Image (tube, rainbow, N blue to C red; front, side):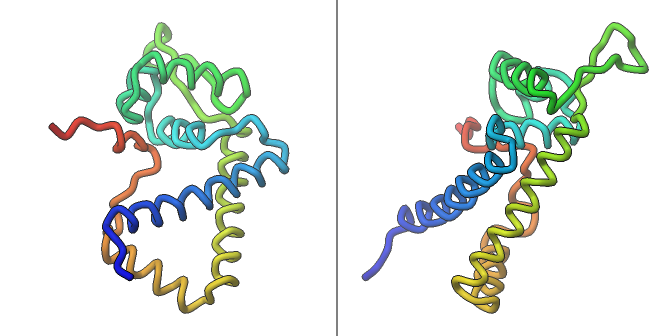
Length: 156
């Protein structure tokens, strides 16, 4: 039976979704039940230098208003802080807090565990082959986790 290109895209998306959903369940079990995937994207963008709502919105390909709402949630939950800019006291910069870095470390550890689970299911060699083939097809630097908005970009 031949599969379509759309089937392949859905399988890849399903793999991503399976891993992310399992990670969110485990993060909740570890006490981070208020954390969502978009929060990780936002905090990684902030860690990479997005220090305002406008900059975060550009990096995530969302409106300034949507970025502001995400910032408000992350500030309220203690995952980021707003600090005075040492170069310009009138300006406030966003920074990831120790709690924010901890939840990201927890998430990374969970993804490592999920990878081990897949390794146990299909075997070390099979998973290594899958990863190698995906790298061949998409390249090493194809995905930047601090810029998830690629799906919303206007290519026309």
